[in-house]
Image 1 (cartoon, rainbow, N blue to C red):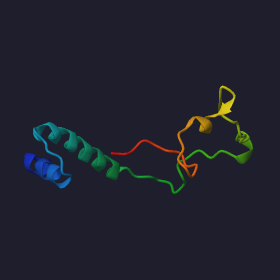
Image 2 (tube, rainbow, N blue to C red):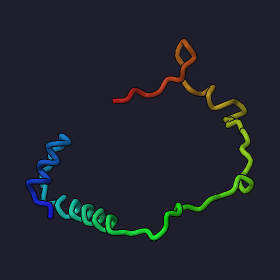
Image 3 (cartoon, helix red, strand yellow):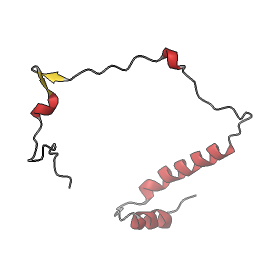
Length: 91
């Protein structure tokens, strides 16, 4: 069982101020219980659990130019002096 002190400590570790740590106790407890359930799962086989698709069943990869008003999309993007695409500043 997770308690208030542990939730507050985790908030301090990730530099997040939690006004009401009790609100997160139930959520964290559910997550931990789910991991415990996953740990108890046993597999009786060593086979890979996935569906294989043969290469013959895949579609052909074809290039299609994306046009806007008969011009390529890249022509509408802002570029700098070295012809690099300018993106919004990340804050």
